[in-house]
Length: 354
Image (cartoon, rainbow, N blue to C red; front, side, top):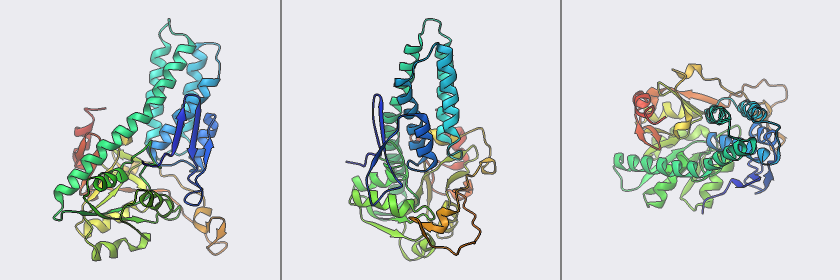
């Protein structure tokens, strides 16, 4: 059984506080969109799919309790709250994609004169709830497509994978994207070993991915971010598989900072480099990665660990949360729920499904 980072039933939402892992497993209640915004901003919940799901479910919980005088009042509230949730972490496109879809959905329903505010609220809640099951189904398809492609390319019966940041059950509704690929390989007895980076400065790899890998009883090894090059030189790495927070029209990809350098090192060592993500991560409104807004995080994430100062007082810090990997470095392909696409053919391949 995979970890459950999101607990939801009608009118109740709890999330596993990822700031406390791996030391403490504690669920915190989310009773409003303000709670959802704060949890996303503080990174108590993180991972592009999970951000969208928790954001929308926080609105579902709020709608369950809140009363409105009219359909128009409800429509205005939903639009304002969804747009607000997008501002918590702007680089990940999934929340913005969900906001745009549900604002359009609400507008269409609100135009129906026969629909009451209670009916509209219920329909919205049901749509938000469907995101959980859809995400797990999507992730399992990503895992299968990616796993099969990696095995088909490999010259060995079992494969060795390197991954970065956290892309598993803690970053999604369950199963995972890049970690879903690894999970699929493990389930099919095709995984020899998985290496995960610590993912400084926030240590999503050492705190979260390592936690999931141990929980799943995989043959897993943690490395420091600075060890990736020598790892690829000395170990027989079959593929690098990472997630994504936004993929644009030409295939350029924004993901956790450090992804770009892994892609460079992988190309030098002729290791296939894959990006695993659902189509909700695709942003066809942007042509290249240069257009992606990169979130910058507080300096304390670099200068302290669990509140303990580890850097010299007074040092200046630059802390981008993400970097952009050019499409030319994504040599394995972009793994989606519809198959594995070369970055240059992504737009042609996926827009038929959008």
